[in-house]
Length: 182
Length: 275
Image (cartoon, rainbow over the protein chains, first blue to last red):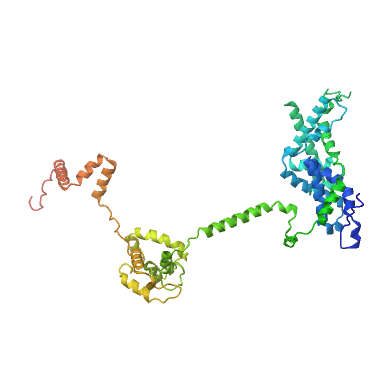
């Protein structure tokens, strides 16, 4: 199916014609979806972001050949688009139903419901973290980007990223503990 | 049946440990999967977007004006500043007074308020400043005009007398009109364009102010005024003292008391009397 639709990017130089949009979509759409989904927690919105990212690729196709790391570039586009989209959607539009699907289907209903509620609580606390800490934590949670790539995306140093992730987890732990005692 | 594991040390269920809960939530994000067929859908959408006929207004798109996403965050600030500037400009333009025929006629007779170097104006007040060589600040003639008409009738002669030279109050109106008629007609409309009624109005407008300013009160009037205004009984004596008869009687009484206390000294002996 993808091969049928192979859209060879109309680049000016012959070497650049190797890069096809179909290959990019096939290679990176999943990771881009997860990047967008970590921020938006809404499948439809995340898929929109992936599509918008590739629209940007078409618009900036001439810059593709000059890129050192296409993956980081694409993730950065998707990340910024998702952050922008996040400002426009209401929190209730974020799909928290998926949290109820996360617990294992083998669990009893009451335990599964309890787990789903706990996961939702964690997401609520993540949303209340300082912006930089939240972003670093979410990018690190993807497990597809190393610290230097996260640093490139967030325009920070690697040590700053490590500190942000550490602080984010500490804050999250502290708030969850406080919530349990309350 | 699966049951949640428990931490043997704290007897807290495994799922209640914050670290575990955080990892669970992050795992959920990590393993999120798009709906099936995401790639074909995206490719279809992109292809249909590329094959779409170009808009008739595509030539209006200016690629150089496209703003990067990072800089786009500052656009609302600039847009707000530009909008405020436009609103202020529009407000200034809308509230600019439009010249009415009457004000135009008046305005043409006062060029000195418009430009310092302009040919002589009709207004005697302005000729005053011109003869002194004073450089009055240039003001828009239309905006300054209503202020002057509002101030002039209440201006007192003392204000006029405080001017450096006042050859205007003694100058007859007829001479003013004649002088205005003799002036060359440049950007200034000659006085003969005025109707008699307008000329009379103008003469009234530029005539020395009247009524005369109130004279300062005499001490008696001031005392009376204070008494009427404040009804202070202690001032009654002060007011009574203003009566010449009462004051004369009081003076006589004081003189008698003085003489009673200080009797007249015996006459001095002359040096030649004792011998």
